Image (tube, rainbow, N blue to C red; front, top):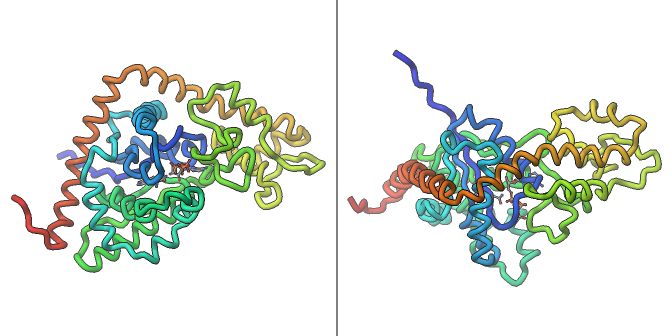
Amino acid sequence: MEETVKKKVMLSGIQPSGDLTLGSYLGAIKNWKERAEEFDCYYFMADLHSITVRQVPADLRRRTMEQLAQYIACGLDPEKNTLFVQSHVPAHTQLGWVLDCFTMFGELSRMTQFKDKSQKNAENINAGLFTYPALMAADILLYQPDYVPVGGDQKQHVELCRDVAERFNGVYGDVFKIPEPYIPKVGARIMSLTTPTSKMSKSDHDQNGCVYLMEKPEDIARKFKKAVTDSDTERCVRYAPEEKPGVANLMSIYSACTGKTFDEIEREFDGLGYGAFKPAVGEAVIETLRPIREEAQRLMKDKAYLESVYRDGAQKAERIANRTLRKVYKKVGFVARF
Ligand code: ATP
Ligand code: LTN
């Protein structure tokens, strides 16, 4: 008899709060696609999370659809991966509330993303922004994943999710699988091209520091030519993140796009200086993103197809998520409706 081996599960999400960047591609999505065959995968558009910061409704709707097209264009086959919109699966908010009651005020207060975002949105430090990691824990734990592929900035949230799951399991028995963060060795934290000491981020106001997945090749080339390096007179391509953060960032981008090691890159540009290096990084990024942009543009024209993908995705996600939610409701003592 043929033995059916149960695949391990991977899950992740991105907020459709802005256009996807090279940072989220190299830090997260690239790993999603590289592992798509090996794992049973769930990827969603985290629209519930997006409204922790005020959004223009029409833009949020458009970006949610664009993000789905970009997920598929990045290589996530909807036949093999479950792609869905977070707000289509009510179990996320339902488990989110339960986990709010198992997440401590002190834990949430220590989250660096909360501290950063409340500084940037001082006029709107709402409760959702604060309890966001409990909703993220619900997103994850509903699907009992083994791995959560994210960039380095989300490690703290995945660790909190593990603590909350262990706390819950400690009271009620083994309800949740404890997931591991899955973070790439190169590209876990891509920095801004203009301020290499801060993270490349889709909500950054400095457009020149950020490269978008859908950006035109000539704009990408221009941004890399202008990328900040350093005033080092030898203009030597050498990996020294403390001393030369701009160059180290460009080397990480080049390495993640081409698969070359830092040693190989140093040898390739030995004696050539930044004048040759920066446009080469731009070219590598352009060629990495070109097929994604072209395919996403094609998919965006096929709204009916995208709708069928998210409808099927929600149906499958809901089935799995409700299984965990029912178990949790029973464990905490809610009366079953039927
Ligand atoms: P925002 O500006 O709205 O906070 P963001 O650009 O920081 O967004 P997210 O939507 O928070 O991006 O992140 C999506 C995924 O990509 C997450 O897994 C995150 O860890 C990863 N990621 C985001 N930015 C980077 C980056 N600069 N380098 C590596 N990974 C990143
Ligand atoms: N917090 C993440 C987005 C996110 C997520 C998740 C990632 C929401 N829910 C569940 C992994 C698993 C972010 O801001 N990038």
